[in-house]
Length: 76
Image (tube, rainbow, N blue to C red; front, top):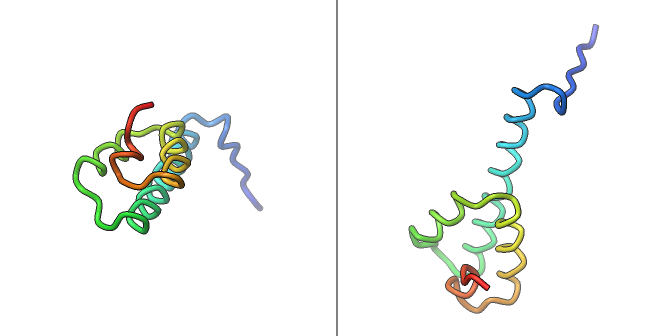
């Protein structure tokens, strides 16, 4: 007998799912930045660790045109 769980209506599972999702987004942005600019300094790691989904999306878009890490993280 299969058990079905509704993640959206279960606060515990929803929190775990959302945390896993944002950690995946952080890992992707980190890999993209490393690929483009090499080893990341501590201040970049701190920014990524503190970023929410919206900020990570903005970083991902900015890195497409940026020529430096400072340009990626510059506040518009």
